[in-house]
Length: 199
Image (cartoon, rainbow, N blue to C red; front, side, top):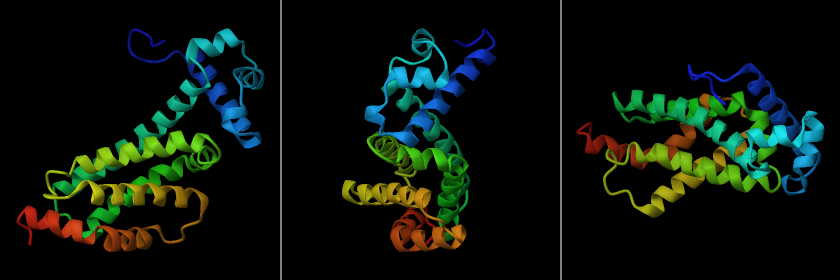
């Protein structure tokens, strides 16, 4: 589908945008499991053949949308994490990682909120959980001795924060990020700094 130079044809982009737009519109009307490919093609005003040129089925479409969201979120958070790794693991610095993640979610807040409803929630939750886990794997070497149970607590907590955020208004993101970091990650940050000879 990509051209020789790696770019995607504008017609392909327009078609995919129409399919995704129709998908989100339908999710506002009914649960993912009740949406058919016929619903999607009728809403997008395309043929079934055209749909199948882009996606294998509605599950492939859902996975593709969730993967795009995770790619964007991972890019934003990992860049900030690298900056923090190059300086110090402090509560304020780690809080900025969370802020960057929430800001990335903000850009697609409506998409997250829609996908977190009904049966599509399981797919997005699993992908979000795995993405946050992969971010923490980047600092695993800095945090010696962290066990699987603690890691699951942190990752599940972060996943929950994103879910909460997309369905609620958070007035002071910086303050809330710092409070969350201090309460839930303070000891881990201390271990990370101690391991790097900062304490």
